[in-house]
Length: 330
Image (cartoon, rainbow, N blue to C red):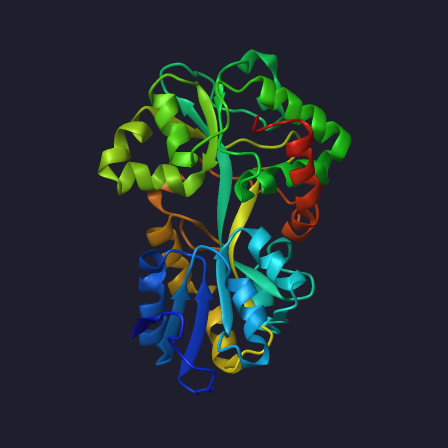
């Protein structure tokens, strides 16, 4: 049974039948996964969900931390956890055999449990082309036609870091200047608001994550008109594939229930959880052979870029500095 605990919700004592999870993911979104894990294994999940500060909390708790697993979205938070010294290698042959190397930490401290792509939302009425490259977003033909959230947001930071990994800082800076020159308005809002502004005619294309569009289309009735007015184009790097980021897990350094934590990570990349990820969170499974959700499949077959997420993570600070240097958010 799922327990969403508060600040003092569970203690540090180890138990053969419990696992303690700190997560940046929305509690109600992932609760079904925790409940299914308990049904499948008999291991109780105690979870704390927050939007910020969990890695600092684990660091402050030190050896007495009750946390076994850190579950989050975006490579930046997992890499921050590693840099903060609060993780340890997962050491699971099952995880290594299931998750492709580009979606795992080379030292084993984190692994992807699902994937999300950073794609183009485009007006159905005003954009006729069906393919586009990331490089093309800086083409002057899009001048005054692009909407996007802050360049410092972790989703865009990872995309820009991927550009640095491919082309280096100098060429990425020129690309960012071109992208900024094409903006229809100052970067603002989130990915859903990008679709909203395209639907309202403020811009023709924007950049967003795959699952937001699917949620608007399938679940969020008040936002369905934004999805209905737009289409998703899977962009690629020239000579490469579509940029993907992760939802992932790290094993906490002082995990009191380490064996159960490893079981949880292995379950999360197993067939049952992978299908739940596809159907509940509209993400791409990391496990080969698991069907994607039909709405996600409607975007077309994705060709994932092969740049390792660890390499993208290593370029995050450079990407952030370039955003400030070109005044992207100004």
